[in-house]
Amino acid sequence: MIDMHTHLLPGIDDGVGNIDEARGLLDAYAEAGFRWLAATPHVDHPTVHTRVDQIREAYRQVKEEAQQRGITLLLGSELYVTGARPQPGIPLCGHFQMVEFHTAIKPLFAADMVFHFGMLGLTVIIAHIDRYRWFTLKDPAIQRMREMGVLFQMNIDAVQTQRGQTLLESGMIDFLATDNHGSERSPVSLETFSSYPGIMEKSLRLLSL
Image 1 (cartoon, rainbow, N blue to C red):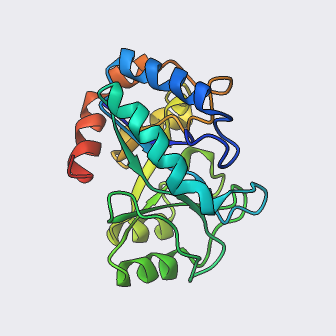
Image 2 (image 1 turned 60 degrees about the horizontal axis):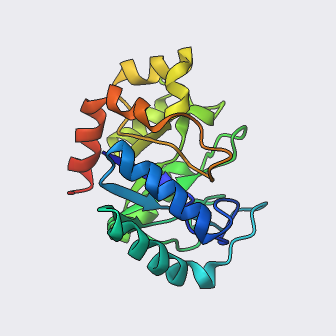
């Protein structure tokens, strides 16, 4: 299994606070049978201060801890986007840029943003689509993004809601993830992932893992 959206790098953003907390979470992931995790710290978020210059060193440290537990740790970023030409982030697996938007304001620039990243050879993954009040399956703009190759991630806690079930039934969900910000705010038991083996297989295939 894979959790491809986490904030496990200690002291980097509003996620895990220290290496001991990271070790505890890695133990839990290993016990639950996860083989891959992706650290996706916030970048360019308007309200979350991120120590961008320390991301790679924190990643190196946690990656070593993960390897000791039989887990491969990937590095990406969750890039907050407010315009068609956003700041550069850290591509996941070298080919994917995870992005997030304001939850209440529809990003009218989204198609241009997708084109911008496409010119850089990157496929856009929109994080936690269950949170966006403007995200509706009947919206032509959403269908257009899908046609442009955009991938959609839903937070695992949303499977317990009617909205989450509707999204799952639509076939639009490519990734399920915890968006884990630390042991005190971990959304649900990691065991929930095992109920969705099809999406797990799809996720690994898309990321070529």
